Image (cartoon, helix red, strand yellow):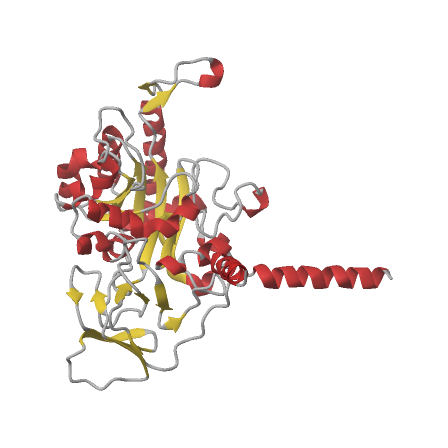
Length: 433
């Protein structure tokens, strides 16, 4: 009897697991695919009105006009009246690292301690996440999975969102290290009755000194004989050689300025500012040091009363007009859920002055360049991965971005999610009443 009860529990758990699991990853592309007639937005700023897109073995083999006299191969998809885009890329994301905020056991986005450059987010990435599959129906097909917490959070990696495990998912392993810059200002501790107004952070100088000392020691260690193994110091070596990027999370003008000078003085080769709320105030400095910006969430309010109400909406244009390489992220509260809105952040940038194709680059080719994966993705160009999708309309407009097909590395992926299943269930319910 006891064995029977245990067997019953096992079957029930198996059924629940089957019901709640993510869609099965698509099989490797085995037949050529031709998409004809759609308006192709290449992600480079160029548009082909009546396009012909072909890909085979996961790679794009032809991108051009449907008027081209070239033999069509394999499965032919008539996409006349529709639009084709490269897969969107979400940077600085904790997708796959946290599933349910209220359940501690599902959280794996940060490690204890302050200096953790050796912590790798990739090995904690959960490809079975139901949140990840909800990205795909909006065209968000790739992301930079990033740890949080501490002064140096750890190492991020770039993944695609249709995989069996983290090894399958990886597009670029350990692309960079993330540093949270000290805040030069602080607010009073309201729980102690202190005013909540901003004031200078008395410990700011000491915090920078401690950070500089740590980086300097790491550099000295990596220039030495390394007889004694020091994993955190060793993990920082690639930021001095240039094989990894140092992503510095900073928002205000002083923090950004100090962070840039810090990177220059310590010999860091490649730096990207993440956040960059006041980056528009230091565009000359960013341009001088060839530093890109992964901009804060567009759908936000201004931080202070004396700023333009639409500053977050037009921030990307202010930087792009000055020649800064810009990408968009979905940082802040409910970041993982809001990541699916990435195309609509770009759409808001377009509504507030940025050219529509330039806005598209904020979530495609620009992001790929910043993350160092532009040779394989981020735009529709021959030789790159066939990671793309077909939409009924404008992908930057939430009213018309209705995907009918999506491909990752040429694989025809599922667009079904928990949300689409619920929509179908209740649509059928009310249709039958």
